[in-house]
Image 1 (cartoon, rainbow, N blue to C red):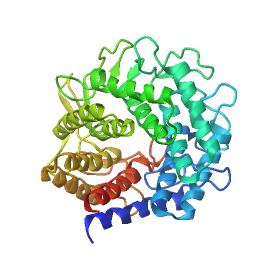
Image 2 (image 1 turned 45 degrees about the vertical axis):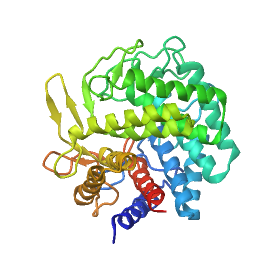
Image 3 (image 1 turned 120 degrees about the vertical axis):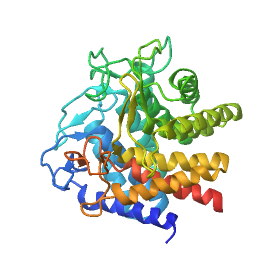
Length: 395
């Protein structure tokens, strides 16, 4: 079996896990949490990010597989988002609801709004459901109205339910409470690029062009070619960490956005930036094909954990580098990355992928198999991207 057959098999194995263990038959939608051993944690909260990522996953899977069950599961995610997560009074989506769909954390995190757009646009592409893209358009309007910095461009992190000022804007406890972050901008970029594929709106085009420009001029550090993770409203850096997974994810998402826009000059700049980001990301590449989590420049410490999503994005990033240069170095990096995933990240016992392994390649205890952050989006997308790109090269 060649590597592409292995990856296709893995795609269906991941999807099968979510079909078998993800569905919440009592309350609708999908469960909120399973632990590392795949044990269900009853009555867990449900996150809009997870559900939007599930929506994207099964929508994209259906476009590849043409299996009706994948479209049905996408509709299941869509219905739950539409009914329980969308805020009909103020717009946008809530951060979390309880297991039955009752509102919990009603803040409006720009990151979560972006994933809702990303998933809704993909579902529209898969199903033709006009209501889905109309909902995506409404969320886009909310982001542009309330989240965008009209003076210095970019997007602020978070707001209360009614779009009033929120003091703690952090996406997670490990983040710094700053007004602008790379992570949010990366996923607004990703969402807007996907929406623009299906809705050629001039305001959306301008916003996407602005985001590409922001990455090229403010977020990619001119000296290191790594991403700047946390910034104030004036784009001043507030933390010095190299996030290798984000570097390599941005390397291909930035180019994808430029290609969606179709401006050759912008594409040329994005290709150059893509290769610089890829070179920067390779600083975290180990001999066994794994990509470590991050490097803290304040104390010189490497966090040598190998998280599932970082390895998934590495697959795509290295393959993208190979396509751009035809350099077998990057093809070998991709092959080694996949081998590491097979050896250490794929969980043949409990299904899906592990959250990650430590520096000794031992499974990280206490992390979720399914949860607010543990989702089927990075790994299914990596499989789908490789299969699509392989087709482009060999057909």
